[in-house]
Amino acid sequence: MKNMQRLGTVFLIVVTILLSACQATPSEEFITQKDTERMIEQAIPTQSGTAVNDLGIPEQNVTFETTDTSGNVQIHVDVNVFVPSESYLPVARISMRDFTKQDVETLYNALCSDAVPVSDDSGFPKRYYQKQIDKLMQMRETGNLDKYDTVEEIDVAIAELIDQMNQAPETATAIEPRFEFTAYDDGASDINLFCVRNDSMVSRLIVFNASDGVGGGYAEYIRDIQQTAAFSRLVSAGTGVASAFAETLGPEFIQPKISLQQAKGMAEELIANLGLADFACTGERLMPLNNPHIEIGDEDGSGLYEFMFTRSINGVGITYTNDDMTSTPDNADSVAKPVRYEKIRVFVDDEGVFAVRWNGPCSAEEIVSEETTLLSFTDIMSCFEKMIAVKNEGIVSWDGSPVKKEIDVTKITLGLMRVVEKDNYETAVIVPVWDFFGTEARQDSTTVSGMDGYESLLTISAIDGSVIDRSLGY
Image 1 (tube, one colour):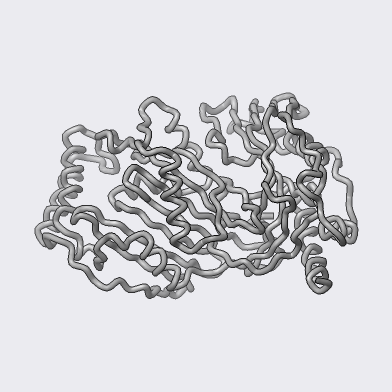
Image 2: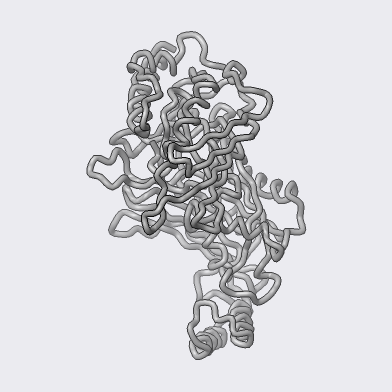
């Protein structure tokens, strides 16, 4: 036990330096400077840490109003506070890893066992091409050209598909799937696997391991590759999903016929089949599956459910946010390389699992502290009240004129987050944090960000009150 405490002490020195270093510089200093020894004593207790029930969290809504110094940014808070059911929060270490051959085989068996494995385009049956031809013909008739500039371009595409269909087999011929990665000169590697359903729908599983320092790997499954364009905008960028979610609030959005609980059961069954017992569902929402540039039929405006799974440590889940990947700061003294946040997003429609996106696989290394000492909720709120205004002051439009902004905090959550270590790309630290979720409405924009509920306006370390930049990961 003493050895573990000693290891935790050394480890928290690094964490303390990082969390303090990333702290924004406000116009007035409001966080008391702490020496390293006192910080370590606060984070790694000699007897027991701070129980969640002892943080002084009010049972009623937290309410207050504030503004920045210019008066252009108004902040409103009137929300409940959400905390884990566990009594204590841990500090842990994880390591980034590549997807393995076994990962690919497990994913394939869980997602594609009911389909016919095929090689590539040469194994796609005639009905697959016929569906695309019918779609393009309908686009041609309605004038919805989508990515095509002219009708002549669509005609060329139709002719090419007809040629492919004429050479295609009537039915899919099964092959033995190969779970070997193709390696590239830059150190990256990938696997592309295809399978056919009902001789008309082609599914794809792609698993990608990035070269060192490019951001970690991902695995992506989609049940119908003809829906790739519509689906890709839901996963193309972390914050991009928020704008897509806004479409679910419109009158044209088509709700899934199955219930939320039915869909969630399917997603949880998939996670169980993947053997990921240490992952928990930490988010859920409706999402649109449509191409916003083309309106052909009801099937193009159908909705689906999304369920977000993150790693759970000692029963406490890593908080899900729309932040997808850390970025390298634009300076030579960057403390870390970019890497994807570990998360699994499962999309379910009336037919079952439609798509899966697994980012940044990791391995659990050790629990540094099972019972971390945390600041009181009053101290955290004091930090938030000052820093939310500082973070948002001085907002200007493209022409340099001041912009008025209204911020509504919709949820306050205590959970875990991964932060990077200086000069260490192999491992990262999981620490307790407070996230303040909400919406932002700018005077110079018609878009309100954060309506899906997963845009963190501010992330604060629950250990020392320092502000963590999720876009940098520290």
